[in-house]
Length: 308
Image 1 (tube, rainbow, N blue to C red):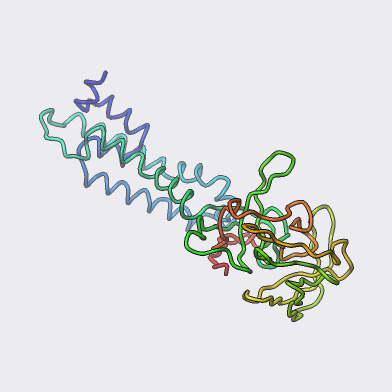
Image 2: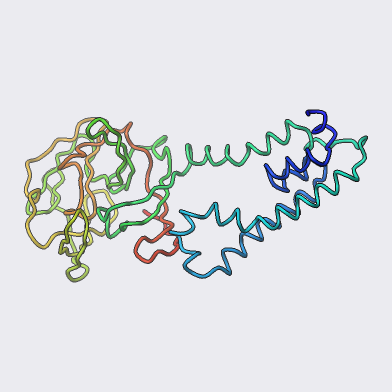
């Protein structure tokens, strides 16, 4: 059986094409230029799929849930053409043909591993995608948003006040990942008085931006006002404050210990944060820093928005 693959016999060639497609198949047949041509045609086919399908099929919801299946179906005619083309080449191929480096088995295995290896490396060391299932970070991030978090952002610097982070929390023996904003640094004292955030006794600067908005989450609807909040050492950012008193609007001061950070959600009433179950975030539980929002959960449109 192995000799049939070494000799690039038609049935062995067809097997490679069926399992891996025409790009790898043409490399197997020692046809580098044809391999690149099929790779280019494959990208063009998927691009045409995204451009000419009805809008509902181009939506992020469809793409993220069925994108791989849609891409496979779109590339199916090209794969069939490649299979027939490759089988014809295998029948006419000279058995003594000198193989280029890319036609050897170890090169083919390497090419097959490149793409999953790149995905693994990017997700592990550069950017990891997340989806926000609640409105707890509105209005900066909204329910249904998809975003990337930059991994290992604090190798050369410490977390800063105002950073929006993803972190691990452990509730009931299981790990849960949250997105929230750092408001308290090690050694500081954090307190809420009348719903306002006090850091070491200093209140924030609040500027009202608009009228009352209604957000529905956690099984209920909440009336909230939008403010621009400025606290010491952080860029101004938008928050939502409830129009009625909440149980955590007045709290005792909490001291933030070393190597820990106090977090609050931007939507102050629809959240779990350092006042409730999440508590303080240890430095080694930080997964990454929110960097880019790429799907708007409200409009279900692709966006590319940098998160400061």
